[in-house]
Each structure stands twice: as C-alpha cells, then as structure tokens.
Image (cartoon, rainbow, N blue to C red):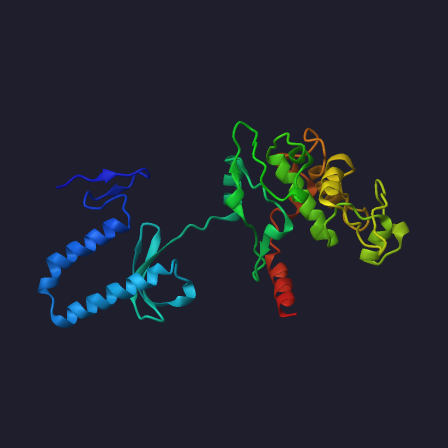
Amino acid sequence: MASKNRNRLNLSIPPVVAEEGNKDDSDDLTEKCDDEGVSELSGDQIKALQTFLTQKEQLFERGELCEDELERVSELGHGNGGVVHKMKHKKSGLVMARKLVHLEVKPSVRNQILKELEILHKYVKPSNVLVNSKGEVKLCDFGVSGKLIDSMANSFVGTRSYMAPERLRGDGYTIQSDLWSFGLSLVELSIGRYPIPPPSRKEYSMLFNIPAEQIILEYDEESTGADGGPKNLAIFELLDYIVNRNPPQLPRRLFTDDFCRFVDKCLRKNVAERADLGVLQKEPFYTKYEQRDDSSELGKWVQKVIEM
C-alpha cells in the first residue's frame, strides 16, 4: 500500500494528490485526459466535453462567482469540516461541485483569539462598524490589521482623525491606541457627530433639546461655529487639537455614569493612564451587558431604518 505524505496541517494526503498547483498544471491534466480518454468517447460525448470546457473557461475568466448566480441541485456528501453540493450555474447551465467549509466561530471565542494573538486593527472608526438586519455587529476592514511585534507597531496606517495622540506624534502605538479610536467612535455614535472639537454646553443643548444648565461637563470649550454647529477645522488644526487639547467627553445626566466612565478610560491622552482590555472588561458598563443579548432589539431598529 502506498504511503501517505503529510502537509503543514498534519493531514493525511494520498501521494497521487499534488499539494500545490497552478493553471498550467490544470491545463496539462486536461490535455492528458484528452489524449487518454477522448479516443474512447462517442461524437456526442466529445461535443459535450468541448462545450463544458469552453463554458468553464469563459465562466472562470470573469473571476469569482456570486452566490446569486448559482442554483443548488443536491447534496453530494459531507465530511472533513464541510458539505459538498451539486451546483448549477443559472445562466450557462454549467454543473459543478462546491464544498462549503464551516469556519464560523463564536464571537466570544473569536474575540479571545484576537486578544491572545495581540491583533491590532489600526482602523477603528464608525464607518468600519457594521450591523445587519439580525442585529449582529461586526468590525470590518481587517485588511489593515497587524500583528503586534515586540509590543510596538511602527507603521502609520489608518484614518488620521481617529488616531490616538501617540500615533500622530509618531511615537508608535500599542493595542491601547485602538482603544482610543474605540472610545472616540463610542462618543460619535452616542452624540451623532464626530466629537472633535467636542460640543459645548450650548451645542449639547441643541443636539438633545434640553436646557444647557442640565448638562454637566468637566470642562466646557467654546467650539461651535457661527451656525451653532461644530467648528470646522483644517486637517492640521484638527490633528493639533487631538494632540494638544482636552479629549472629548460625554456629559453626565445625558448618559449613565458607568458609560461616561467607560469612555473616559478609553480617551486618556496619556497611554500610561489609558485603560487596557483587562481593565475595560472589569468596568461596570461592560460586566452589566456582557451576558445580555439584545441583538433582536437592535435588529428590529435596523429593519425599521432600512424601510424608511
């Protein structure tokens, strides 16, 4: 019996199966099949084979297929972590086999993996936070994520307006730089606008339609424009503001003390004072909602917004 070799995943693979290949290998195999088998085919079978090969080449020259282009015919089998289905391309009628491999991981497990591997996202901002009609929230654009090397990352990738002060100073950054971006995103999602420069009492009063005297801020900076809205800053003014001025804050009474404290710990300008993941996971705001699944309520809201 022929021995089996093993690949990097320690899986047994028959020696007749190549572990690597390219289009040229596929073409060679097709020619070999043609030479050995075509002579035994009837005229109709040869015609059908030629039609199939032509359709296949035309189909895959277009790139990846979309799910909407395929029709599931039947299940052919399952195993090795996936299910194989017989599929039919709706437009061309080409029949093929497709294997779906299950890679879904529980969010809690996935987050723990990212945490333990010390993955930096480097691109945390509201536009990269996605929510679907089921109320599932996901962080996208991991194409610019990076592995934390020697506790510091030296690249300068990301959206400047959401960068932590240390990144703008060129000091390098740790995972806590993502927590600054996370805190900034929480403030923006809470008040409905980019929070730098931060709203004054006057603007908060306009945003939430409540008397200004009911708004409690640790410091109140006049940062509104002539129209009562946020003051427009040039890019270098904005970056200077992030580095040298007070960080954004949420007003008490409008938001719970637990939430305000959670955000405040994310937005400490001094990295040594900024919370890490371990500290945030012990915060009352986190522990209160850690086991609560309110995705259905969020999903209903998303569906309502979509219908508007």
